[in-house]
Length: 331
Image 1 (cartoon, rainbow, N blue to C red):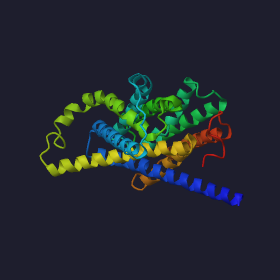
Image 2 (cartoon, one colour):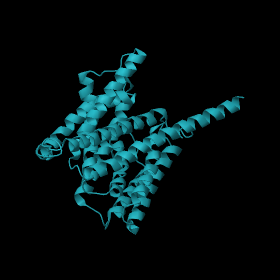
Image 3 (cartoon, one colour):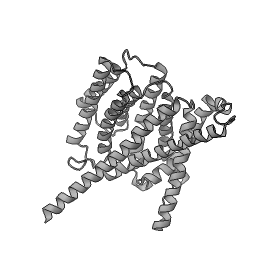
Image 4 (spheres, rainbow, N blue to C red):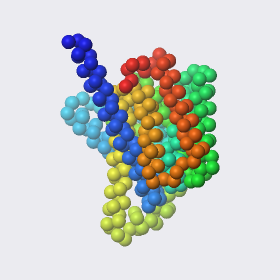
């Protein structure tokens, strides 16, 4: 009877994890292709990102209010000191990561974006070493070389390579390394009480909005104010379609953030990382349906990057650093 109960519990946990991973896939892959589709006709990615942040904040605030009413427990609200000192750096890095990523869709394909963005793990490792979250080992250096070499091979002589777009997404990957390192430090501070994904998103969005606003004002403010799609609209139907499309992206962005934090809270960051590897493969396979045939160097680069990332994840599984990521508890 005890053995049967353990088997049922294991199957239930595996099915729950699979469901969370599939939920994460739907939002992550969906918003990637959505952003590429929308930026083909709406050339204001920073404004799009800011509107998404506003939608996420509204949904988070509404969710917090509903949970508080149903549970009769007050949700966490940080003091201004903790908010500005501990949350602001993470919020600024997250805003730049998301903003530059969306900006790059004006210039590059989904496949080039996906593979270049996957190099963020390289910068995460570097900043993990800087912040003493990782120890320098020979295996770590090998992982870095595999990922960096894969990125070079994938982009070398690419028929659809664009330097401006590549620089934007590579900059986003660099900032993403800072972002996720700071996020890990932030979430490890149990005294802040931001373990709930809704509370975390609620506190991050306002500072992310303010952090991205200067870039928007400099690069898009004037052009947006004279655009016939928004402020100088003549067709009300067109305006409503544009706003509806932007609002849909905000819903996808909220779902993505919620599914990421939910997956990590119910399993581990290792599970999210492994799921991200197969998400890259799924995105590339979907893109291949309407993109030109990839070159040999692109395929070799992609294989090298995947090998480096998989080696990194296998190493973390076999030799965890005294963390909660214990083998056998992940999937």
